[in-house]
Image (cartoon, rainbow, N blue to C red; front, side, top):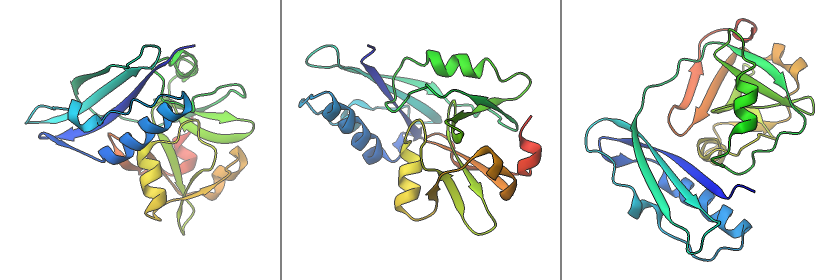
Length: 199
């Protein structure tokens, strides 16, 4: 079993964003594996002073004590203007593992779309790189059973800006807008109508 996990952290002009949520998720993974050697992630992150960067922090729990590695990548947002629904009832990605083979295989099914939206047990979950939310003319709703509970999703839930619900494929017609969420794009509202977004 792969025991190398990661956090993707946003940094702008040397400032690191929402590190407490990444720290919390990191500590939850350690707890799951019975690891008591908790490190302060912020001490390991020294991003460049100018520019927007994706800080890729990895840690391997197969070794004790575990080591933290951080690399910095200039961030260029991937344009997502269409999704294809793909179905996989067996996929598991509850921990942010470096092993993304199953996600990559589903992404390869996107055809002419920019990414896929994964359907598990008839319910919508995530794209391969982001949690998702839908606007129902009253509030933003995110799937209650995502593959991965992202840090931005968790923050917005706590702030009362989004709400959880089971969302089936047949429910898509109820929504007028779509937003993608992850640490790098924050809450990115897509302007197309929902019906035009899926290919």
